[in-house]
Amino acid sequence: MGTVIQSMANGFLFGWTPEMEDQLRQFRDEGLSQNEIARRMRKSRTAINNKVQQMGLPKRESPIKLDRKIDDAVAGQRPKPERTDPLALLIRQATLPLPMPAPVAAPRTCQWPLWGNERPGLNPQFCGARPEVGRPYCCAHWQKAHTPRFSWA
Image 1 (cartoon, rainbow, N blue to C red):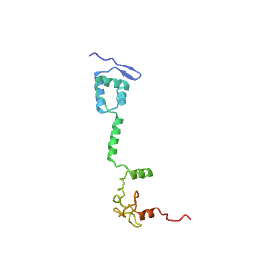
Image 2: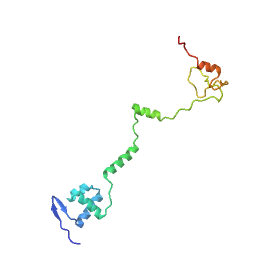
Image 3: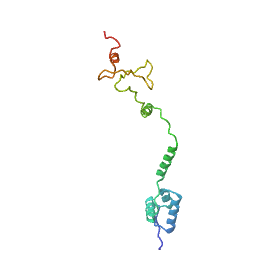
Image 4: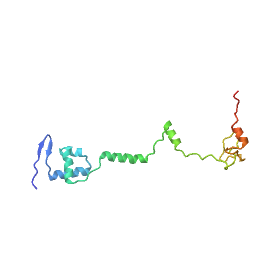
């Protein structure tokens, strides 16, 4: 190998010696950025990138991407704070399991529920009488369901 002639222009060195290539490998092994290597070796960042490609050195992951991966991994370990704003509460309620369907009386029997003023229980009782044709209630309950509670007069 012949000697490499180095010249200086605008504060940068031109040409590469085997010692400079070894120093480039050492800086990369230490984990220095391309910009820091260029500053220490008094070469442009483009010259460093080109030489790394010529030497066939493996590409390194961007330190920014590494920081993001670390942040994502740490974020996965921390519990997220529970939101209390109205929209979050609405979303939480919308994702709750649906209530059990309302119990239904046996088919072809009066569907009139038999309970007082309290809320219906899990197993309400139904009238069970024979309904009118095409209607869900027996005659007595049909009239009760369709009688106005107050007079319009």
